[in-house]
Length: 446
Ligand code: GDP
Image (spheres, rainbow, N blue to C red):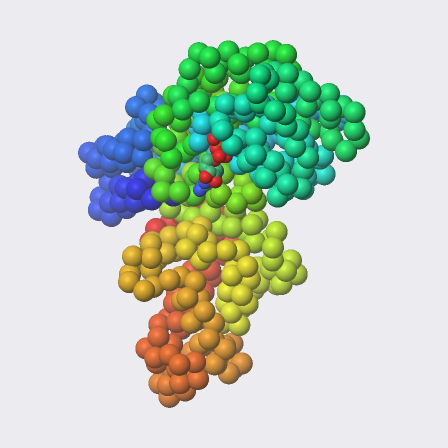
């Protein structure tokens, strides 16, 4: 995601880091940043405001006179991106006792029903006892779909016959049912959507809002729809006073502008992001990580968090220590690959590692290159090495390369490439160990 914006911002800032800095070329880079944001579907007003702030700060004496003005401007852009998207209050302000009600709304196809189940799963993991209520009586199949996803995440679903029924009643009945049992403390209302914002929909949702007084009203909006997502967020917010937004489909080929505009245009923070169709693909929204991701720094923190959920914690800790000390060996690399494979598709993961996003794209574009297969090949090569070679890849000379290649049915050149890639990566890790964010950003851009 954010490919186009990352590329153009990267080139604008990259140009700035070469050559001498003066007011004219700072202005030029800022114009490129402006273009990149507009192309990424960030709304014009937001871009205008953003550019004004960045220009003002970038043309300040401090930047012009500093030894590394490019770096300073990257820092300014990074901080302004964070300001644009934050601050975020992730809390859903649940009641300590009684039933908490979360009302989910959004246009048809935004991912509302799926997100209800994702949120229920997340709440379950936090020890809450959620129940879903099928109040979308509009979309054919919505009730059945909610029952299915509810069963998949293991939460009860309150559903009624849609014929002649009305959604307010269904929600009220759902909450009444929840109150009768001790196995529910949170009710998530899956309300109806439409293809476009219309008065009838807003009336229905306002009624639910008034009659049920939900603790949280969350808007589910599809990042792939760009400016439409922002426009619908504005309309929903005017009718309902939203508490937060959930931006879905950020895993897709989105230009990402919506993430940058939703908060600014509506004042409503994005609390969560949907990053895949599966029901565990809901994450907390972190403006700082998103800003880093947009700037092509990768999202190493998210990756580490994701990893920690599935990795062997002790092993992770050992590896992190070794990385921090710059003592990373091919053995560690091998172990890491094995663990990484548990996380899912390689292409997706590589995009989160600083500097590797481009490589994932390149692999995907090159015929027959599949990152997952590549990992398998690398693993086979490392398995053919002796323990000494894994500890110290510099031992691997031509005859050892030939032997390793024979052992795993590969080419000696491929073994050479692996060693080279590993050395580059280990070098980068050593450089990054102990660096602050700015320095890391520079290291990745160099
Ligand atoms: P609703 O009409 O708003 O209830 O939308 P659905 O929940 O039926 O979702 C519409 C489509 O979007 C379905 O195919 C979902 O699997 C898909 N979807 C939902 N969230 C995400 C997401 O975060 N990423 C991706 N790639 N697809 C999603």
